[in-house]
Amino acid sequence: MTASYPPLRDIPPEEPPLVRTTPLPNPLRDVRDRRLPRVPGPCALVVFGVTGDLARKKLIPAVYDLANRGLLPPGFAMVGFARRDWGDGDFAELARKAAQDGSRTGFRDDVWARLSDTIRFVPGAFDDDQAFDTLAQTLISMEETHGIQGNAAFYLSIPPAMFPVVLKQMQRTRMADNSQRGGWRRVVVEKPFGHDLQSGMDLNRLVDEVFTAKDVFRIDHYLGKETVQNLLALRFANTMFEPVWNGNFVDSVQITMAEDVGIGSRAGFYDTAGAARDVLQNHVLQLLALTAMEEPVAFDAEAIRTEKTKVLGAIELPAELEHYAVRGQYDQGWLGGQRVVSYVDEENVPKTSTTETYAAVRLNVETRRWAGVPFYLRTGKRLPRRVTEIAVVFKKAPHLPFAKTDTEELGHNQLVVRVQPDEGITLRFGSKVPGSSMEVRDVSMDFLYGEAFTESSPEAYERLLLDVLIGDATLFPRNEEVELSWKVIDPLEEFWAGSKPARYRAGEWGPREADEMLARDGRVWRRP
Ligand code: BG6
Image (cartoon, rainbow, N blue to C red; front, side):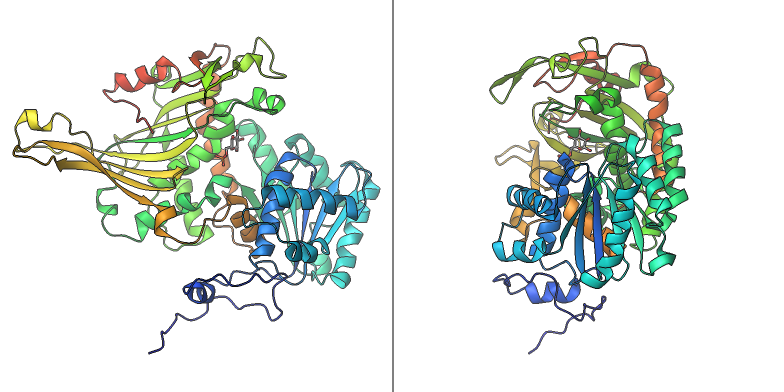
C-alpha cells in the first residue's frame, strides 16, 4: 500500500538548490521534505559589519548550514561590507574559518566550494559614498553574474549608532527601493532596538523612512529557538493544556533566563545597557507574550504579532516597585570550579559602575485570562548555570482527601517549558509513593527533544535567516511590540536610576532581595 501525502504547499524551485546534501539514512526524510520545501527564491544577502562577532559566530555559520542542508537557492550571493582593505578572497577566507568553527551540520569541502563562489566583498566605511555606490553597482551586476533577480536582504550587524548613516546611504543609492530593479528589498535589524521608548521610536521611524514596514525584520533570536516555537504547538495543537491555561487554575508564572557567563568583551555595550535592557526588554518579554497570548486566528505573521501585541499592551507593573523590582550586580565568586572576578573588575568596566547584571520583576497581565496571576521574570549573568525556562505553576487542589502527613511533600503542579539546554517539557505532579500508606509526593514526567526526535534543531539564526530570505515575518517582532516593551522597561529604569544595585556572589542565584520579593508573596523561585 502506498502512503498518501498532503499536497505540496510551496512550489520547489525549478533548478536544483545551491548545494545538495547526501540524503540522510532516514525513512521519514521524504515525507518531511514533501511537507516543508521551504527554499527561498534567488537573492543576495548583504551583511554590514561582516568582521564583527555576530557575523563570524552566528551569521556566516548559519548561511553555511543552510547551504549544507540544500536550503539556499541556485541564484544566491553573499556580500560582505566592512572597513577593511580586502578583496573577495580575504572575505572568503574569513567566512571559511567562521563556517569551519561554527557550523552545526559539519564542514564539507564540496559545500564550501560552491558557497565560496557566491561570495563578494565590498570594502568601505559607512560614510563612504563611493563604497555604497560600488555596493549598489555590485548588486546590479549580480543580476547577471549570479541571477539574484534584483532581490536583496541587508543585514545590519553593526552598532546601533551606525544605523542612521547606513540607512541613509541605502536611501541615497536607492538600494532599498525595489521599484528600481524589481524584486524585493528587506532589512534585518539586530537588537538593541533603542535604549528606551523614545530612541526605540526614533529607530523605528528611521527604518520606516527607508523600508516599507513589511520589509523590516527585527531579530529577536529567542523566537528562532525550536522550544520557543514549540510553546505555540504545545498550547494550540493540543486540547489538554489550554483549558487550564488561565487564572482559574494558574497560580503564577516564572520565566527565567539565566547565564553562567559574564560579560566577556562586551563591556562597551553592556555597561550602558544592563540586564533589563539587554534581555528583559526583548527575549524575556517575548517569552511572556507567547505564554500569555490568546490563540491566533492563523499561524501567520499578522495574527501572531497581533496577539502578542495585545499581551504586551496589557502588562502592568506593580505600584510598589520597591518591593517587586530587584536589580543586582555580581561580586567575585566561584563558577564551574574557577574563580571569577566581580563585574566591576571585568575588562573595561568602570570601577564605579552601577549597571545591573541581574534583574527580576513581578508583572501582571491585565486581561480576563490572567487577572490576578503574577508573572515573575528574572535574568542574570554569572548565575550557577545557563538555563532558560518558562514555569507555569498551578494552584493547589482545593481539597485533599488524604491525611495531612501524607501530602507534606506535595507541591504545586507545574508545567515547565525548558527552552535551553535539555530542550523539552517537564510536567510535575503528585504521585503515590509505593507502599502501604497513601503518601503523595511530587514526581516529574519529561519530554526531551533529543530523545523524541531524530533530527537536531536548527540554530536560531539559521531558521531566522531562512525566514528573512523567504519573506516570512512570523517570528519577528513588529515595531509596536518593541515600543510596548520599552513602556514596561522605562519605568523600571527610572525607578532604579541613581540607586545602587544589590549584590550577589558570582555562582549564586541572584541577590537575597530577589528571594525576598517572592517570599513576600508566599512563593519561592524554582531551582532550575
Ligand atoms: C543576547 C544578549 O541577546 O542574548 C546577551 O545580548 C546574551 O547578553 C545572549 O548572552 C544569550 O543568548 P543565548 O542564545 O546564548 O541564550
